[in-house]
Image (cartoon, rainbow, N blue to C red; front, side):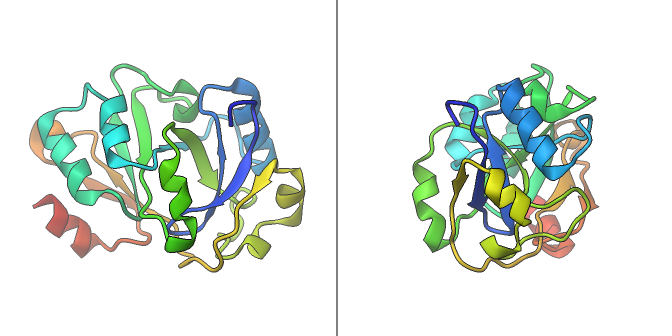
Length: 191
């Protein structure tokens, strides 16, 4: 990551691509590998809830409690981003940040030692099927990545995307994309 590399790695849902969220070259390369339009946002992933909370000190108490309840896990949280952090991940809306903290499978537990954020997206071509196994990642992506981490077969369902941008103000939230965590689990966690 420190030298602009792109990695294929296992999350708790599907295989992903990761790079330094501050490197324009690395982010452009990740998007090119996916054949993804550059104005589509990605997420920033931390491998620890504490690190994520420390990196986003402007989050209010209610939102911080929600993060503590929902993470780590198979969710991507859309959060207000008044400090406009991680601008390369935000696409055309720098006031919104997508945040992921995976609940790593045992085979990928060593990633828990990573103390810095990564920009991440699923390891597939834009609109293509999600990769459950490293072999499911398209061969051109595997060939072009600087590092491949294999943790065997993953569940194969992408993260549930939850919009928490109004949560601090009035407790409002909504599911933008149903995925690994169902709506009842989200509702129970946010009650």
